[in-house]
Image (cartoon, one colour):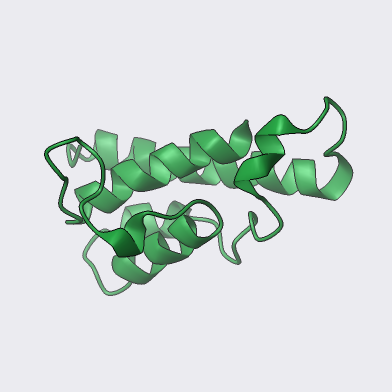
Length: 108
């Protein structure tokens, strides 16, 4: 579930960085209608060159979700482990740190 939580946090940060919302509340850009790992790549791309240095500094690079799939939510308990599990958990903590940095700076 780390991937789903990180994906949601990335989408909040994308909106904070200027990605518009559709009336439905979702991101209003087909380019951003993606899951991890692509959504983190889009966030890193959009964030580069912005004044949000504290937030950018928290984002994980390289992308720790490169081996994550939205279908991972259906795998049996324990099927994902070891290096991937640790990378996903660390990636989630980094994305949450970026979200917290934005909130503490009054940006969210």
